[in-house]
Length: 324
Ligand SMILES: Nc1ncnc2c1ncn2[C@@H]1O[C@H](COP(=O)(O)OP(=O)(O)O)[C@@H](O)[C@H]1O
Ligand SMILES: [Mg+2]
Image 1 (cartoon, helix red, strand yellow):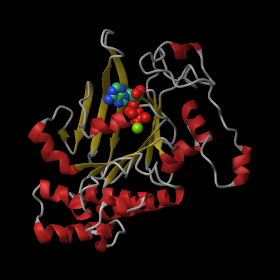
Image 2 (image 1 turned 45 degrees about the vertical axis):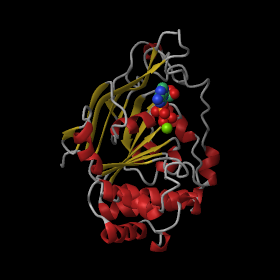
Image 3 (image 1 turned 120 degrees about the horizontal axis):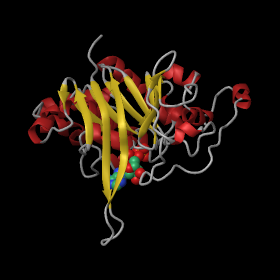
Image 4 (image 1 turned 90 degrees about the vertical axis):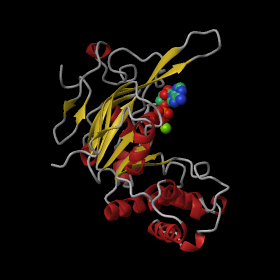
């Protein structure tokens, strides 16, 4: 076995919240005890409702913010406390694509500069050599080289996301963090981008941390899926197992909302509607964070957070069902 490319251990990220000048600050724990790993060339999907801490995990891994606890190892280096020059040196290994292709590209820059900037900044290529490399990158993401001198506003959402991907792979990263990268696109454009990501992975061996609120989107791209709820991973496992035999009631509920192309299966499947809303992360429930909405809640669930235990056919789940 090779060593994992990324290992996140017991990650916690807190934000200080102040609702008014004279009010005391409160601590919002956006990510709580999150652990996972990604092998080289592997795709891990992180899935969960809005507010479950997915973007915070992404930003912590990118070291756009500082974890309050836990460690992040990339390619053998502990990057959780890295700063300044050390962080700049590992940057090329680790790139990100954001949700909104309309705001993530500088509107005043032509595409040659948008895509070529990382090459210049990291001293990889300049001048004609840089332009040649940009042309190759554009072709790699399915865009013609004649786009070089255009501005971002001249492109559709899907094309802009291709440009963002070209920029992100310019430095040949080992890990690409995609935060809701296809969520703003229509279904057919989504599929085109997912196919592109699959091709790039085959050609370049990039690993993906693929974040989405939509479980349906990740089925064909992810090797493994981690399901988040209120800042915690409640279940993790190989995609096939998670979709065929979800072990956590929350995963089951999320899955029941994913449309199935086969109408017969669709009709026979019960949509699980969860009662109530996701509780505030400022006042999370005791014990299992899902217990206030869980159809199978037991007394023990209100006591302590269940530990992760292995599931038959792969992965792990944090749930007392079948244990007590
Ligand atoms: N910069 C911030 N300051 C304060 N609270 C934040 C900040 N960023 C995120 N949060 C809070 O942390 C929680 C997780 O947010 P986020 O990671 O964006 O979730 P997701 O990406 O799953 O929708 C939410 O309750 C959100 O309001
Ligand atoms: Mg988010």
